[in-house]
Length: 509
Image: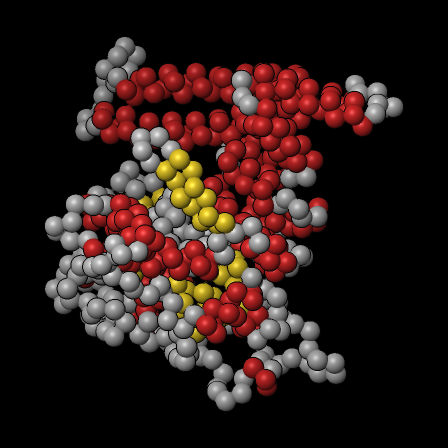
């Protein structure tokens, strides 16, 4: 982008900002001069609320376009400095000049040199290797945070692999594009999780050696803080961390009650401290962790290298999945995936029929709280009727969601409402102002079949995989239309017959 184009872009953004400001001023004070007479039935307060939300959405697009301009300017400055470097400059001279470029950018933006160095690196990557991301940033359809996630998740990939990851999320015409809401409509954290899952499935370098290397860096850290407080954190293998978190949460929830004034967050900290210090944990329950681990069937058998998926975390090495299936009987719930399409096939240890574990199916379908911007993972959420039982809603998967406690309460006390759930798709949401937030689909993909033994060809399932049982059935119809209020019997507590919005909470007796 040349200087004239930069000036033109900045002028356009500035004009849009001025127009937006004038519109918002009029919405904030509809009685001011120029507002004109209000039509019958008009609600100026509602108009102000709509204008402010529209303004926030427009402003987010402007910020993205400004970020794209910053990328062009940072990359252009670095390119100009590189062009002015003498061809015969020594390695030391080039290093010093790069340091000077970083310092210049840091001074111009009033940021640290570390921040400036990262901006320069990301600007170079976006300008040269990620054209779709930069175009989406210029169009305002993704934010700067989304662009940074794309830079992070393509780091270390060869150009073809990076282009494939970028196209999967940003090109609707790519083979097998991402399903559900567009990348720019996901929060950056949820976009990172989806991008990482796709990367681990398609990265040409196995996750196993990278995990082995990272596991050697496990450690416990202690950092003093102010006000007599300190941080204690552990860098652990994901299965251990997930199990500790779930067990601590379950114990903390068991302590909640009318006489308990501590929040769930405070209780988690107190439970963990009591367990660690010993002798102080009397009266604190010690439940087993219950974490879903999804293992591609070929990886389970050692014939494939696809990663397993740990609920609430994401992709983990297949060796970890095999170990959890073999050793984690009471702490980890095994989920096998169908070799035909990658969909969940089995929950638990023996049954291939999903007649009663409907809650586990919800965990698989939704993965986390489905409310836009929420990352609370599935095993810590409530099950909830989308259409209330009192209004004729059934207890089928298509009428169930699993919001976290916060957004469960929001749904029952405001006009936020979930819509559009199916057996395989989580619900989207409609806000009180009528804005629609589409569902985030999970990107289940068919597994990568291993090479058959020499001289043989795979059928749908090879004999060594299918011995002793019939072909796995599709999930039965009773997941979709169960009308009995006892559908969860023997899974957790039964549903009460009379309608109660918090029937699935841990305090529902």
